[in-house]
Amino acid sequence: MVRVAALAFASLLAGCDAARSDAVHARVEFAGPQGGARLADLSLIVGGDKVGWPELAPGESKRANLLPGPRDDRQPILLYRQGEHKRVWEGPAMPAGAGYRIVIRIEADGTVSARHCLSPCSLE
Image (cartoon, rainbow, N blue to C red; front, side, top):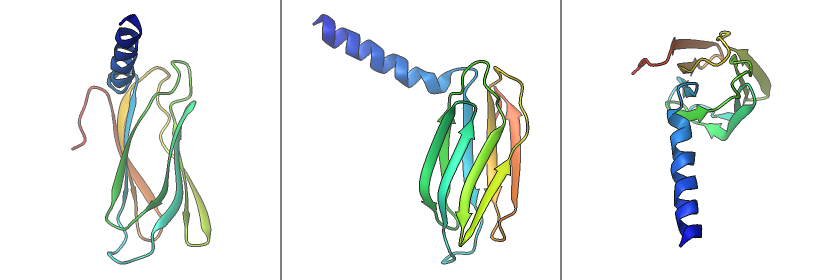
């Protein structure tokens, strides 16, 4: 019984991590034409945390909650492949320990733009 309660408590705490005030809530969008080539090998890195997706189709978006360490660099870095081209985008620098929301938009030609705000906020 104690083991079950401990596991339930650990699961509850793991689910709360995304609600931390220093979490980075990210959305990556690909604005390419429908039926166009997909982006591949995407990695989004913020401090010591990283998330990846094998591909992103035109018109599709992916979401992630990243939890960098409290003293980690908060600048988002996006790596991806577009056709034979490897691309790297470095986002805005953010204060250590700050949580924020960011929407990263990749255009069909590979250019990247972003909107962001410090939490609590909304970009919807």
